[in-house]
Length: 421
RNA sequence: GGAGGAGUGCCCGAGUGGCUAAAGGGGACGGACUGUAAAUCCGUUGGCUAUGCCUACGUUGGUUCGAAUCCAACCUCCUCCA
Image (cartoon, rainbow, N blue to C red; front, side, top):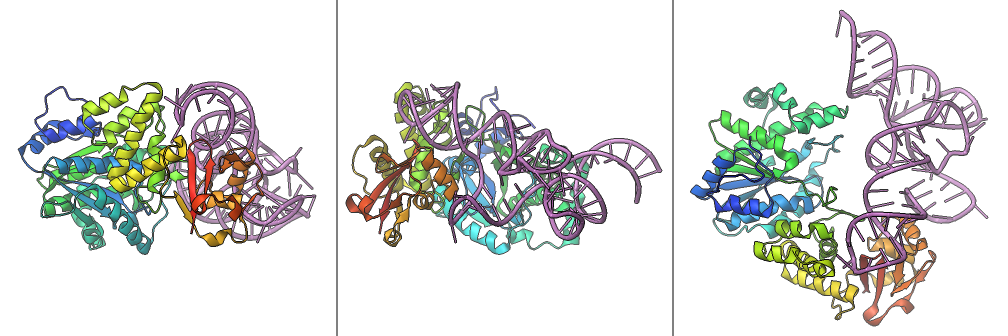
């Protein structure tokens, strides 16, 4: 196991060179061997995602960008949706068990996640990316058979040495056998994909290292040379985990976070993180990335807009990205007309006078009435550019501007143009 | 199997019968300053049809006018013994 970081030796493969340059490599099981393999011809690589939530979020974007680059450079990505493993719940680096999900919930989640994945990798054609569900094989196993065939390939001694497991034990929290066996399932996934699709590389988040290594080792016992690659943990320059906003996770699916909300997230990137994000989440040439991140002071805001528009293009498409950029300019800089409201509510809600607090909650700027009330009382809420500090304020048709819209903002960074229809 | 210790809000952590929706810190959000950045200072930080009501200190029951605090059983973790 070699820490990749920046290998001194020259790389033979374009793929690994690009991934390193982009900052998408954290650890690799065997850099030289993987580099060689990637330079010899097309490689099939996979990244897996459990269906524990209804949508993927920005944290998932790094393995997905890795898949994208690999595909772009002639390799074939497989995206595995964890219909099987989601029934268990990955305990890696978590201090508590995930709530067990119903199969029905899992398949609903998978359907949504699938749509996001299809935007990020190209599924078309004979060389297109593959989308598979590990329930396909995991659901087929019978207990004794599984224990005999695979249980014999793992030792508890080895499994206990992984940090992903130790963190739970060290935190003195219970780790059930069910969760403990998760890494076996992920290892079996890798072997199964190797057998079925000649997949030799698994890409995952840095928390997946233990699970990935188990797969590589299982493969070796089966006489196969498999490779593992982890992407770094997405952190801000100040060291905090990135990807959370006041409203929660930054979801990739438009039903969970509007393209404009998504764009806004990137627009609000801290100065110190702009370069890193351009590298990781856009496909702009490195020279352009360097030019943009060298901008100083307020000029850097232009780079942030480019970042936001580029990432939104990849995740939601060019139309949505352009619309979000226009909305941003109109709402914040007062430039141009907004074509589309950022949020829509049924006109009927205005009939009996809509409470201001209710409105703030309805568009997702506060999680509860109480939170909305505090925001209003603290002077953080503006209606049509005017601060409103009365929590009892009701909204009527008289508050609407042209085209039955009204402007609402919470704080400096959250602005909405609410349309009624 | 036995003895002892522990489980608190988003996280860490104080609290051993009423003054506790629970000190303090972190994080997050809001305000001021700025560039929709950072740093700094100030404020907020369970929910609701809100001068009241509901939910909350591992789980379930009990004692009490009153329980995070006392008792019992259970779950989980740690330490020592077997």
